[in-house]
Length: 230
Image 1 (tube, rainbow, N blue to C red):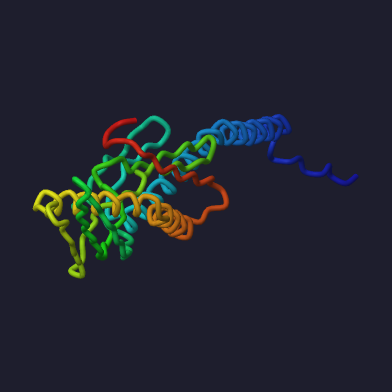
Image 2 (cartoon, one colour):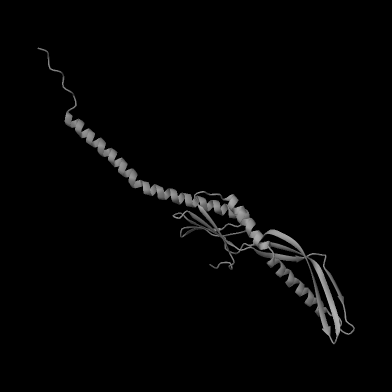
């Protein structure tokens, strides 16, 4: 009669316990990974928000030579600073002429003034430049001041000619009046032109080209407000 086959050296209850422990350990790994997933997703979102905020701030620095204030949700992580006070980005020359007449006791005097002005448009860097990022909405807001006329300089081609009446003579006060009116007309001419709107358009175009994004919505807001006001 042949001998009985040898029995396994590992009892069945030990194998059962090992299987239960392995299954429990695997289940714990799955549960731990699931519990950490929202935290990792939140951390990834915050990192992405900070990254896009810093990129936007870098573009503003390159365009305007100003470090903007950066705010992510409600937390301010950088304050505004700039080494210069204003930045001219566009300039335009234009020619004007004006004629002024004055009559007294049927005696007329006349002054004609003509000349060129150079207008420079740009930004006051003491006004608000701010990047606001809202990671939950994936939106980036750039708050910028509206462009303005920074300087208006009279060229050296100014001509001022006059003709006095028989007893109504041209005076220094008349010349001052005409030149003041000429200056006001020049200022009105610049404001009525497209210089400021073209400056804003070129700046926005440059920013959007430098900050392309498929995931984050970029909103650029130009605000005609005083420095430091909301």
